[in-house]
Length: 172
Image 1 (cartoon, rainbow, N blue to C red):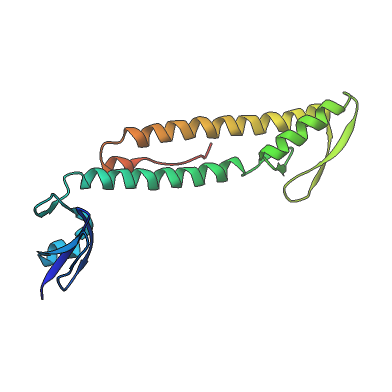
Image 2: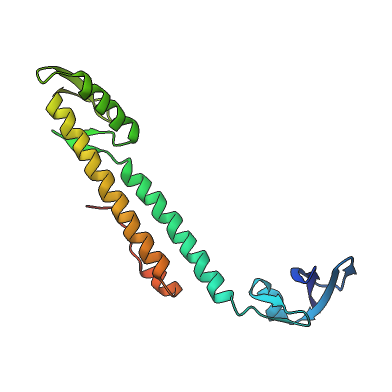
């Protein structure tokens, strides 16, 4: 069987098992190994050669995957909630805004029932709401600082093995 790389406008555009030609398109015979791994090769203007930047391309892809995983785990941690007096409260931005607005309207003697993630209510003073807000702020600060630390490690990794070794954890 004969294998071909399809060259269009000076770049490998695909592969095939029969020759082709057309406007700005032609084919070049290649080995089965090159055919099976065509993404690793480039057209240098006269022949199909191994892409000298392929390892860097793989490294950048691995870094992008690791960053995506980090972002997912970070967002999960940011929304995991905070526990105050055995009640798990939301920890999203809306919760922070609602707490701030409510605290600003309360006197020091007022109380309000504040509901947790499972709809469990807790009778709260202004100080309680401020404490819940403080826990949310601590969680967010921790997550964003850890996010920066992890992304710095990813960006500084020089090999795929180094990227693979980076542990992503938002456990405290």
